[in-house]
Image (cartoon, rainbow, N blue to C red):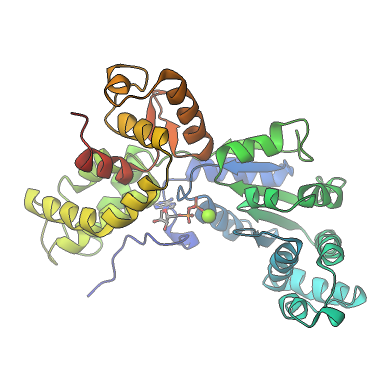
Length: 363
Ligand SMILES: Nc1ncnc2c1ncn2[C@@H]1O[C@H](COP(=O)(O)OP(=O)(O)O)[C@@H](O)[C@H]1O
Ligand SMILES: [Mg+2]
């Protein structure tokens, strides 16, 4: 049997990235001009995927990919930068390995040295800036693109952003630098607040949902190439997932699994696929929902039903205007709510909205 043509866990491989041609052309121009760029968008919108594709397309630069997901200390940062250099392509890896030895660092084993007994353990507060200097020194020897993925995590380590800024600030013309991150308000603050070390240092670029044409192409090609007829499948997927990349793929995958080999998407297939997916994700959805404070839960519920938090629905759920305003701001800041292309407030995750609508009606 074919594997599903709709992978929906983790980043895509470069060849699987679809519907991002305009964004890729824009990013290519920026990297070529050495315009420092910050790619901002909700979780699972395809930031990592599109940047991996960019790295694969740009053969004239070697990419140093720093994944800052979950970093919480200088030691974590040192490990993240060490791993990035150690796994970079040949010209960078070779130079970095050589330069590291002069700084008395064994590339690729920083994690192991940090777990030595206290006496022989390096000080991560010294090691981290040393590794930053190493990244810069290496990048100056060969055309390099430095990707800092999940960059908002840097705020969890005091003074880390300032150290990074110090290491990079005189090299914006030499090194192509791309930041990416999911927490929209943290990302914006990092580059637009005067108090922040990276204030005014990068252009913010938004990654949006996949458009209807892209979703149509992805769903249709996936079905056809595996001997199935999507019928109205692409439209159904788009109507529910609204172009949210990961949910689009997950929904298409569920639909594909319910469509017999050589068969087509019927109303019954769609209904079965939707029922099965809803059952499968009900627990995580309720956990996510329950993790929000009460006024945020009310706001999510009102928005999922396409009502206004300040209108009758707010009164019905006993949500004061003041609480509604605060909750809406917090939800927008965290990326749990976004504005759609018509500037309407929507729940970012369409399957959370679907779960709320089916579980919690508004009277
Ligand atoms: N261009 C795309 N076309 C189709 N699906 C995509 C695309 N980009 C992302 N996805 C879907 O979203 C999922 C998460 O992508 P990822 O790059 O990890 O997002 P992010 O880095 O923004 O959290 C992928 O597993 C895939 O299912
Ligand atoms: Mg990512």
